[in-house]
Amino acid sequence: MDYLPAYRLKLYRNFKAIDAADYHGIARYYERFEEAMATLDAEEYFDCTLAYTHALFETGNYAQHVVMCDHLLEIVIMQNIERWGGEDIYARLLFRKAAALFHLQEYPKSEHILRELLKLYPLDRPALYMLRKCLISQNTTVLMRTRAAAVALTFLAAAAVAVELLIVRPFFLDYYEKSLLVHNVLLGAGLLVLAGGESWQFWRCHRLAVVFAKKMQARRLGAISRH
Image (tube, rainbow, N blue to C red; front, side, top):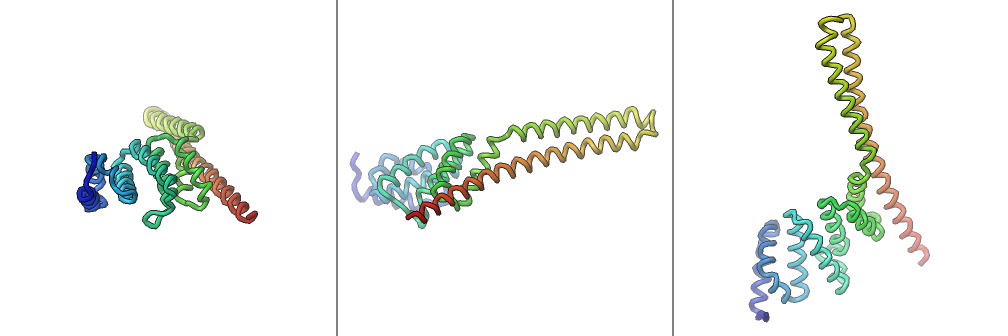
């Protein structure tokens, strides 16, 4: 369908009049006039589609957001758009796509994109932190074992309390202090195992992410020095 210039101007003007924080309104307007949006000038279309893609993320429509990110990345590459709104638009879209995949629990895909992003921008701290979160979410074997051990120790502590209340205090009062020590030790051990597992998981994944980023930074510096 052909749209007159006046209609396209009104379409764009009305879209830009929507409050930037009204993400649901932006998404509804874009989807209502999506066919007409495609007839806008290249810059206007990109501007509107970028705002719509951002709105999808903010409203939790992560699967749709990923699709639109791919569409915008294709436009960025084809039209050689380097910066938009003062930002490196390619890096911004890649990061948002990785974040959406993380929310969708597609951690390997998110990790892959973040590693590719860090190859280009090793000093990108948000990408580094997101990579760490991806690694934490995937490498859960040690974490699950320490949590299971902590739960087991907590149940043993509860059992020790029951024995203390039902048997030791009524019939073996001389052993009360020792039984009190047993359940306190079991409970403390459970807390220590849980804290230790969480800390180890965090440190290990943080270390993996940092080492990768530093490796990519050294590679880029080496490439620059050779030129």
